[in-house]
Image (cartoon, rainbow, N blue to C red; front, side):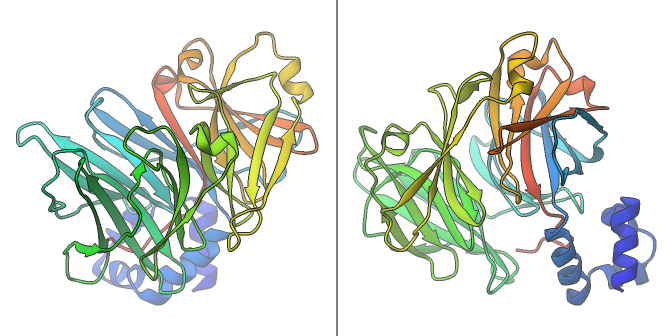
Length: 367
């Protein structure tokens, strides 16, 4: 079976296509031993996931993630996965975990918000039951993964000025119900979350005036909350974007509009001790020669960090319109690699979300 799996990876075959060959193929590809082995192999061969947002839909591609960045440019041609309806302005991407996307939609007719889990590898999407809440405020939701029990869970939060609710739904249990959980400290989530080693991290305000913030830690397995109060301005002023850096929580300091200038020095802060919550190391990235030699200065959107600790950046969408799509890999040795993405010219002027470390998950989604 391992040899067959290797051929699937090498030939870039679609698992969704293979399931349609016959009932026998579908049965084999759905077996737990197959999906677990496929996932373990995919972990060491992560990909880049490209999610292109138009006015009416999302179009999803992926490409191999370069393993040995250097200062030379290279070309990459992503593979198409799927597309589906996505209303610009009323829908959003909550977060990305392993190979799954958590999405939120506002149904125009019913004026109700629904959550959807999307698996680009299988072409499957799953609509979750509606979150039961009496709040009139929008519901904030995040997807998390417990690597011990190998379970995906969705955390949803709603609040008003007088109460706060936290609910959890576990995928694949056959009981599609939301369960209320306790959180002893009120908070207001502000940003997208990142899941690191079974812990879902997100930045939240400590009061409804949004004047101060902290890092919230939600243990996906135990469903318990912890809180990290930090004095550094990159958290308190909400300018940071949380990422997985070498299996540790980290944040890259960004400007107020979420961009950095190509010739600026980048600061990455890493939480070295997740138990004591008080030690953040600072990593400084000097502007590489590749950026300094570019013909024009441009803004960069931060995408994430690879397993090899390379910072991944792309040009902001307002600058993609006059150029091809580039992805930049940047490491602390002051070297950078520019990768040109081919075959996506139609979407260059659109909003493109890029997720490093995308892991193909071929297990079929079940509530």
